[in-house]
Length: 400
Image 1 (cartoon, rainbow, N blue to C red):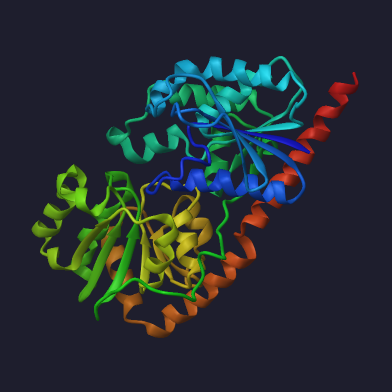
Image 2 (spheres, one colour):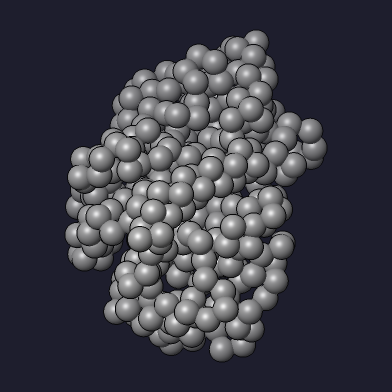
């Protein structure tokens, strides 16, 4: 099968560290796994540097950089005017000697470009949003800073694609509220590289205190403030926050300063440590160093951090929403608490840190759960079957 993955600004070569690493990793691993299954896979991202080659072969798939917009990184909101040009470029490319059997759009920008490219064809389109503007608006409220056109464009995109892929059950519900029939939504969770994330291996240095690890970008939506407030109830433990800018830039980062000031006011400054950005290929050592990983974002559709922690054999305490609620089996692989309930969060962390046997059992169950249900092979297999389904659905149209 010929598969085109359209990701615009979130392509595999953007191997960044921080809150957006999950989308980049997802696309790169899905493309590689599909290629390994014998499919002819091409990935399309926007060229954002004049020195980038137009085409490269990566892990069995072909990566093509689309020359639209300025050859420099630009904010997502500024990509919207370039979507029609991106779509026209794809349509011209696919009118040649390589036409995809199915196109898969990633994120709303990539989906819009894919839908624009195929509108004069019978090529089916699958769409993964990775996050929805309406979800972010609901959970972040006034702190939502997405472009104003995102939500209506996402709603229009749901009507233009053959099927939408949700990464968690909450996202399935959200897409149906946006008007999609349940039969037009497929649930395919993200995957974890169990060769990289596993219990055996080096651990980051630590002192004798129990360690709670939080991983994510430094922004109000990632819930570090809740964890700092909860530390008053935890007792003698340290909270390590990994994410944000490099460590040497934390002093000039507004959110890092705000979190440190909050820790001072709360009386837990000696228990809170911000370590800055950690390269993704080093994250397993940090997970292994923790007694518990706390996942408290205001919303996360994929639940990537919880899955990586579980793969390393570390129990997770997380907010019961989005991909975290799907990944963490309450009282089996960790503990789920009501989102925003700081008191319950603190009490739950304290009790779990005091329960060595419970953490051991949760950690073993967590490893088994990831290896059974959240490998990249499983994700790619589910997408492969989905592609075959939408292609079969379009065949009668072609015959007519």
